[in-house]
Image (cartoon, rainbow, N blue to C red; front, top):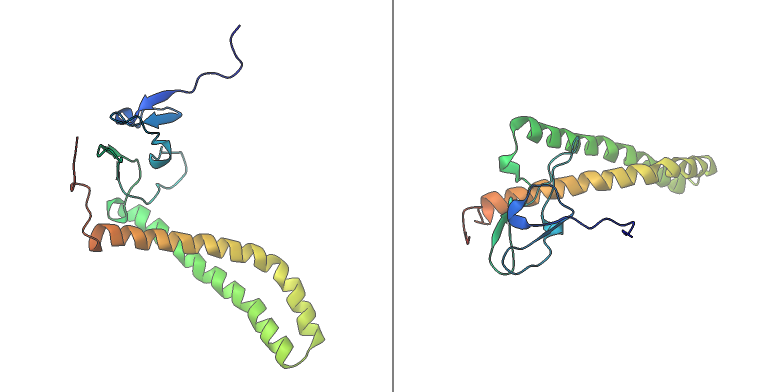
Length: 158
């Protein structure tokens, strides 16, 4: 009788991006699945090094892209996302101002309004955190490609 769980499709990482659930290094057999990024529909490409180098020295395409490799349209989309961060930050200033004036003027009404404003502020703060992560990803990608001296062609071992 066959088991209910089908076997996991494993492929050598050199066959990436052929679809599989797990990828392993051709040389040493290490699991490289978490370092290889399959493209998904309606999702932006991940900003990460375009190549992954295994501990054994073998180099594989990662499926990710660096900032300099994105098209102008994709770069504009990422920058627009950062613009959303400015709007979210402005919305987070409102509870801060309510807290300041409520405390400074000892106004119970403003402090009550602050308590109500804090409920959506938690969600806004979380969204703002995600936008900050995007900003750090962009900065790290630009740093890797322009300033650190690392490029995709250096250290090629195949």
